[in-house]
Image (tube, rainbow, N blue to C red):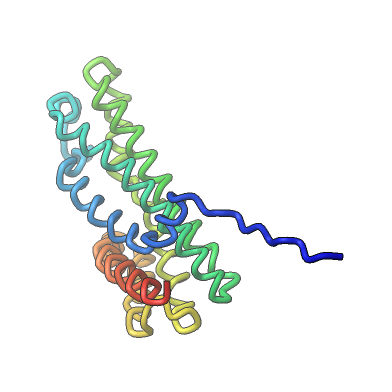
Length: 218
C-alpha cells in the first residue's frame, strides 16, 4: 500500500486572527466597557427618584446612549471570544476541570450585557409610551443587574489564577491579585463592587501578559 498524502485543513483568516490576537480581546473588552459606562452613566436610583424623574431620565437621553448600547454589544462579543481563546489555551496546556470555567464566566458576563442592552433598548425606544410601572421596573432591574457579572468575574479569576503555575499564561504573582479579586467579589454588598474595579485592572494586565507570552512562542 502506498503512502497516502496527508491533507491538512487550511484555517480561515478569521480563525488565524482570533488565534493570534484573541488574548488581547480581554483588554479590548475592558476598555470598551469603561467607555460604555462613561457614556451611559448609572441608571436612576429607584429608591431615591420619583416616577416622573425616572421616566424623564430615559426620555431625555441623547444619541450617545445609543452609541453606548451598540458598543456594549461589541464588548460582549469580544468578551466571549476572549473566554473561548483562553479556555482553549488552558486545555492545550493540560488544564482539565478549570478550563471551562473561563468560557462559562464570559458567558455569564455576556448574558448580563445582553439583558442590560435589551432593557436599555426598550427604555430608550419606548420609555415615553410605556406604562410608568414598566419603566420603573426595567430601570430597577438595570440598577441591580450585577449578579451575572459577579458570577462571571469570579469564575474567570479563579480559573485563570488557579492554573497559572501549570500553564504559564500569567505569572504566579498575578495569580494572587486574581484570588484576592475573587474573594472581594463574594463579600456582601457594597464591598463586592470594589472587586469589579479590581477585576478590570487584573483582566487588563492578564490579557496583555497572555498576548506577550503566547506571541513569543507563536
